[in-house]
Amino acid sequence: CGEGSRTGTDPADEAVIAEAAELLKAGETVAFPTETVYGLGADARNTEAVEAIFEAKGRPSDNPLIVHIADRAALGELVTEVPPVAAALMDAYWPGPLTVVLPLRAGVLSSRVTAGLDTVGVRMPDHPVALALLAAAGCPVAAPSANRSGRPSPTLAGHVLDDLAGKIGGVLDGGAAGVGLESTVVQVQPDGSVAVLRPGGITAAQLAAVAGEAAVTGVSAAPDFTPPQEAAEASSRPAAPDAAGDGSPAPRAPGMKYAHYAPRGWLGVVRGSSPASAAKTAAGLLDAARGRGEKTGMLLFEEHLPLYPAGAADCVVSLGPLASPETAARFLYAALRRFDEAGATYILAEACPETGLGSAIMNRLMKAAAGCVIDAE
Ligand code: TXA
Ligand code: MG
Image (cartoon, rainbow, N blue to C red; front, side, top):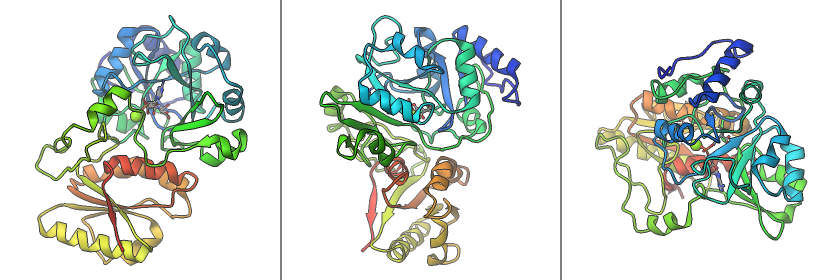
């Protein structure tokens, strides 16, 4: 239909899911809810359909897509091998927010899905609408997050429409996504260890519970997977241009390949030896920014609110209690979008401890800030 219209409001409605599945089978793109974020799906075997995903998102074609399946039996058609530890992780966490990168079986998927790599990332989402859609479509579905490339990932159908209306076949509205951050991406190494390529909804501790503590090698605030030739180029690339296009500062660090998950304004992450010192530094910077004519934003944890002077920023958004990283994860992307709605040009965000889901939260914040960290004493 090309209008980016919602195909229905009742996600439990079988007819709506059947209609969306028909769109997928016909080579259209359909956005759908998962337990992590909304995905923009297409038949992973159909090159034209997969190209429509890249087109709608404005996504660089060398960044591979995750393939979604509803049934473990579908795996054999897609990959040549499942290492024992990968199988154990799937037993424990599928369906769920875990993507496993496995050796690709040639000839089934469009090579556009894997960006020409000889591996493929596969996951089984834990969401009734996603699983029903995948089952009804009966094909492997390539689905990156359903946002314009570089924008915060969508956790509501409305976010999908904000970014992609008119560019996609439709969106299934399943309400708010659960985890709020994308899946954890892992790859089993030749020595049997589990490398975390992207922290996400399954924590390092959950991986270690299955694979063993010593077998999990982590990244925390590292960028997404970067193909080797791009990594070499990126280090010589100038800082990305002003993301807002309106003259607001955007000192994207060279070496980061893409601006990820970013609000339109400039974003910095504030770390401090204590919450009070971080708040003091942030309040001073916000004040100075406002003096320069910036529209300011502050992203903080609920219990730190009293550490800031009243009206410390034009737009103050709480991620909920520091003790509940689940809450922060669920609202992080919506919060980043909130700053755009408020027209914020200078935004600071409090750092959080990198434990449990906090690793994924910090990973996304650091990417949104393109690595820009302010250390309070
Ligand atoms: O939760 C999620 O994973 C969401 C929902 C929609 O399922 N999807 C998602 O897809 O986040 P996307 O395309 O935004 O992120 C895919 C990530 C990227 O970091 C990509 O580089 C990595 O997975 N990836 C995909 N295939 C890979 C491969 N063969 N090797 C290494 N990394 C891969
Ligand atoms: Mg994404």
